[in-house]
Length: 113
Image (cartoon, helix red, strand yellow):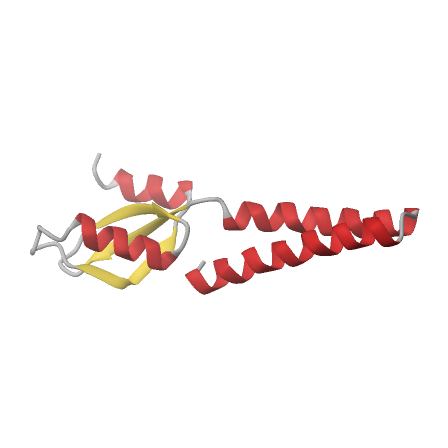
């Protein structure tokens, strides 16, 4: 997820909360409750996306890999740059940043055993 995508999701969540409040005041009926439940489900889904950090894997230009935990890919890149600023032999390859999963991490770690 990029910073722009995260910002858009936060804004969408705010809009949905406003709609729920408006609907509650205007139309307290079962059909409106169904709509509000749909909005609430979407808010929960968006909250999980927006407020959960992910593990981003990346490679170095000279070989090797590492990970950063961040909300967005931009944040992960900035963390990696700060982390390796004093290691001139470890230049990160920004194009390789991606959200990783347990299977990929296990596979990468297997190279160490």
